[in-house]
Image (cartoon, rainbow, N blue to C red; front, side, top):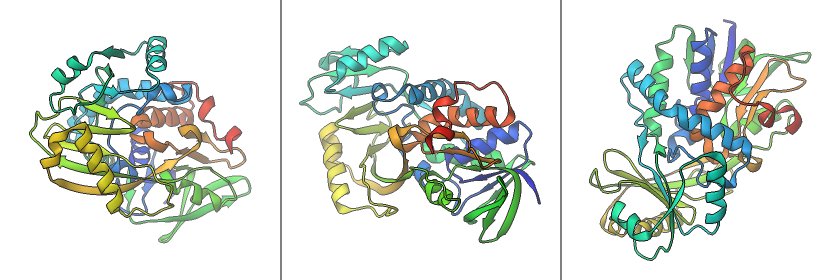
Amino acid sequence: MNHEVIVVGGGVIGLLSAYHLAQAGESVALLESGAVGSEASWAGGGIVSPLYPWRYSPAVTALAHWSQDYYPQLGEQLLAQTGVDPEVHETGLYWLDLHDEDEALAWARQHGRPLQSVPMEQVHAAVPPLGEGFQRAVFMPGVANVRNPRLLRALHSALQQLPNVRLIERCAVEGFIREGERITGVRTAQGSMLADRVVVAAGAWSGALLETLGLELPVKPMKGQMILFKCAEDFLPSMVLAKRRYAIPRRDGHILVGSTLEDVGFDKTPTAEALESLTATACELLPALADAQVVKHWAGLRPGSPDGVPYIGPVDGYEGLWLNCGHFRNGLVLAPASCQLLTDLMLGREPIIDPAPYAPGARL
């Protein structure tokens, strides 16, 4: 069967790319080497903001702002379509003891974002379980987190309802079919599949896949470990972040604490050292967690890329080959804008933002 588009990768970027393309009328086959949504997208925290948005380039900021504004309606749309609530949960976010607070506030003024300094007594009143010893805080209201496993489940369900989509799990793509300068399909363990266009959205595995074409894509795995606690539903009213670590409340009282950043290849094994370090972070941020049990401890592999700027668009010299990958720590944050931009470009529509910073051509 010849599909108009093959999407390689079943994380949030692949699923949402397929969803947008299918809604626009394209026939789509989504291929995933394992189970849909079981890698980095599942493993992340789901904060709908870069950890330190003012430290990123305008390219990341443009995608982040569009996505942040779009997430609430995406959550409502998926809930209505599938009955699965991705739980886009607006809690606001407190940053504690920033060394670059002045830069953060200047960035917020420049971009019209509601970030402000708040006195610590106000923070402790708003977030009673917060630990002592923090000196300064800034707060941004309206920052949400999304319950990423449920977002993935909702996208999976939405795609299953669409007649012009085929989801093929446990089907690893091993290489591409090439005719002259054109990519006409993919080779898999289950045989060859033809398509007009192929989208690589394989996260940390995208670089290895493009190596089969002799292309050098600087995307590599960066391991991150997280732990999960279960508390009362109203235990933590807002997200808190200090020293590159964070605590995220879910609506049902689950608290995620993360994360590590490790350059160890494709090793996803949770380690005792990380468990100890993350537990110490949890107790420093929220001392009451010292008496709580760690419900779960896991690791995932982020698709590390230079400056965290993803590759979105066609690959020069390989007609029919498209990329949507390399989102590093911000795949969930940037997914709605990235996938809308890809769809606009593939369908020849006016793009939602300037596509130039993400174009693979000048960067490969």
